[in-house]
Every structure is written in structure tokens, then in C-alpha cells.
Image 1 (cartoon, rainbow, N blue to C red):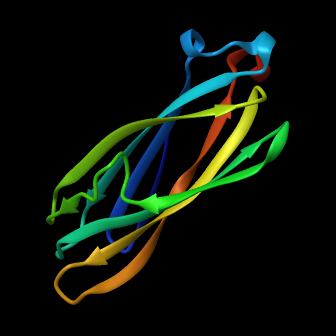
Image 2 (tube, rainbow, N blue to C red):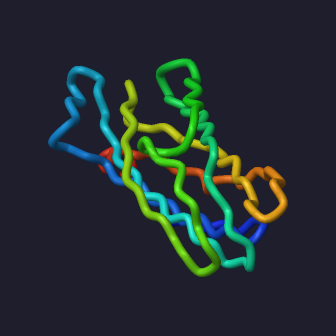
Image 3 (cartoon, one colour):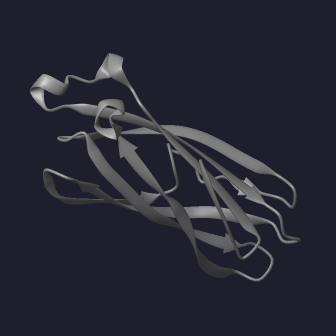
Length: 128
């Protein structure tokens, strides 16, 4: 698990290998990840967009970009948090995800970027 705080937005991220959805012999490694976004500031904010760059040891990098997360654009008042779970598949036992969220401060309409802590996607056997 790793955490970053930028512009009063705390992002905590963790990943997990999912053996039931994976088939290492066929080169399919499935990972879930859990993200918690907490507003530690004084202004209400809304998550508008996300951008991920997925690095796979055996494939070209992939980019995932679009509105919100898991079909939502959550609004966070001061002290509120939002948690979601999603997933990523790789062709190899090792990869990494890096990303950022575009947030909107509702009071003054200012957009700002918040980095997401890197997620390391590692098959347990590859860790030995």
C-alpha cells in the first residue's frame, strides 16, 4: 500500500494478484487494485477524469483515459473519502501502473492534477 497527498487530496493505493482469474501458463495475469481518495482540505472537489499508463514486462505500454472512475465522478466534501476497486490484466508476471486524476475544485472552478501512487503488479512467484 502506498499513499500520496497533493493539493489536500490523499490517495491510497494497493494491488493484489488474483489467482482465480489468472492463467500463468497462458500468459494471463490478473490483478485487482483498491484506491481510496480522501479530501483533507477545506474545499469541495470532484474527480473528473483519470489517466493510467500500464507497463507490462512483456508488452507495449497501454494508456487508459476517460471520465471518472468505475462509472462515477465522485464529489468529495471536506473530510469525505471515496473508495473503489478495479482490475488490470497483464501478459507477464510483473508490471506497474502509474496515473493521475483530474480534479475540479467546485468553489472556484479550478482544475488540478493529483498523482496516483504507482501500483506494482507482481505475481507472488516472481517476487522470490
